[in-house]
Length: 456
Ligand SMILES: Cc1ncc(COP(=O)(O)O)c(C=O)c1O
Image (tube, rainbow, N blue to C red; front, side, top):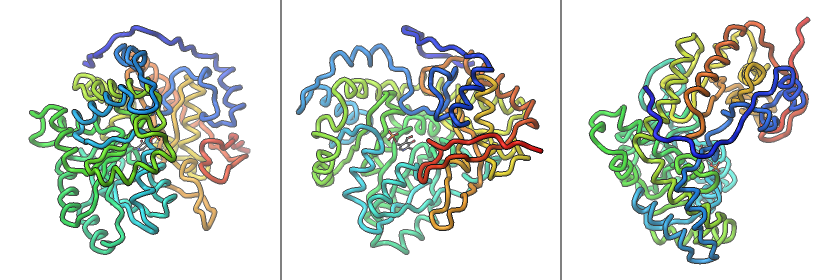
């Protein structure tokens, strides 16, 4: 049984608009849930980023936010939290995760420099490329198999990584481990794998970083899935993980449970000093870096709340509950269930819709029409086109992501989601594919407009 470790103090009302209105709203939004108004959505499972509910301690902290330009008290608190939890001395706040990527890559990625890692998140990859570098994906091959069980599908393939290091030694900017690995379904990386990558990095004198957006969820998976880790506390596991790397890039909108914020934390004073000018130029002075004092205060508090074991057990348990109940009803889902979302395999859900008709995106639209739930496609619409041939890129997996915001929804909401998706599953043969009627040249999924394909 799931034991919620909190109760409600402040509520936000939500309502479900009638089916006929949902049809009208979706048509007006060009059959793209990104273009729906949030007020027309009943349960919003678009993302877990910045959508969590803050605690009374975080809200109280906001009143204490020190808005001084330089040397604010709130920043002292943020530094203390990061030092206590992660062990780093040098901290640069940034307005969100991608800003941390921008600052770090501006310094570390040289022309044509390579950043090997487990499947990089889109903004991470884009920032490395913006700095004229290149990413190489070294995730283990099990990550691509939607039905095979592996407890740590986010792991890096050590053999592959060794080979890449040997072949490109002079050209490697740094190594990056994304925990949990969002791009392969919120799948964790084991402590043993982190240690193996760290050994390799030290041997080759390479810097190693975490993209740590969901580091606490990753630590929870280590505790519950990895041999000899059950006796360790979450704090101890995090200390061990962090001891393996030179620094972290953090989008605090996830495991620090704030609506906005991020940071870079590093061990080396020299590296910190190199990062400071870029950070000041693009983010702001070193003690606020694009955040307000009150947001910094909420972040400092949220870091502690995000690593509480009973909170993590409920969070990861809630995601697994949704996954298990959908599976019981025959819905094809990716296993094991990730930390922040359940992924539906849309190719298996809608086998008659070819990939060029966006089965994942069509399924998202149908889920909205059926029950006012907003999900997101991770498939052909997101993948875009090959820059040279201009042809659609067809990814191996065509997915619908049901992303669970932190501390927002309760069992009844999740049960409602299950019942809606079950109804969609029962009428799957009637679902139609979509075609594009407007397509922006980059990041097309955010702004694209589509319409249903009529069958004659
Ligand atoms: C793994 C990972 N890294 C980086 C980011 C970027 O963070 P932000 O959205 O705060 O810029 C995200 C956001 O979803 C993410 O999931």
